[in-house]
Image 1 (cartoon, rainbow, N blue to C red):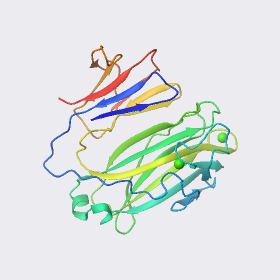
Image 2 (cartoon, rainbow, N blue to C red):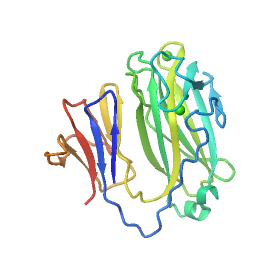
Image 3 (tube, helix red, strand yellow):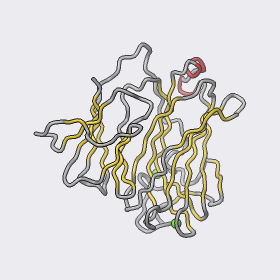
Image 4 (cartoon, rainbow, N blue to C red):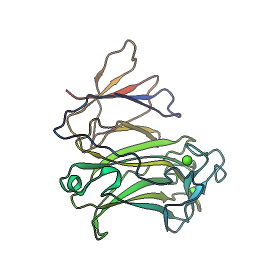
Length: 269
Ligand SMILES: [Ca+2]
Ligand SMILES: [Ca+2]
């Protein structure tokens, strides 16, 4: 299984995730995307609950010159004001085969992926994150997780993906796009192509992610998995792989953009 993610700005930097499947005692299970209108292609905020003060909406590339949807004809954006949210709550039991038994056995993970871009207004520019809330059958919040704020403001979209354990007792998940203003009056943060899936643990393969934030390249994988080693290589044809030499904190490595090619992979013995 090979995954390659390229970042247009860091044109020479590529990410390669080479993984070995992990044998597990129970059958692997994964849904497709549970979100409706995930990429704003309804042309409206249909299926999303609007919160905050900035009246977030959908954009067709006209709000800020040079920022077009990541895919399709529309994306979501913050609009005008300090912060805004777009939320969608998903009922899990019976949804694409998810069972309460699997949830309450602690077997399931929520997998999040989204793309972010903001208007260049310095560092930080307006940015955005995803917040996941896990709710019980009475819609009380059991726990909440958030991705980092992604601040991709050099006319390129950045992807971020991560995986979160679904707490025992969870019956619903609220997925929230959080648009945050750091500069000016407009909230110029944009999100497109949201994905929320549910799968069994342990993951067959952790997803290796790369984002470009504040002139740094951040390579990361789920902090929930252990036993994987990050390796690098500068030439896939003739080079050799070596263990990443820099610091890794919570399965996250931060680098300055390299000169030339640099490939990353995760290895599991
Ligand atoms: Ca879209
Ligand atoms: Ca702004």
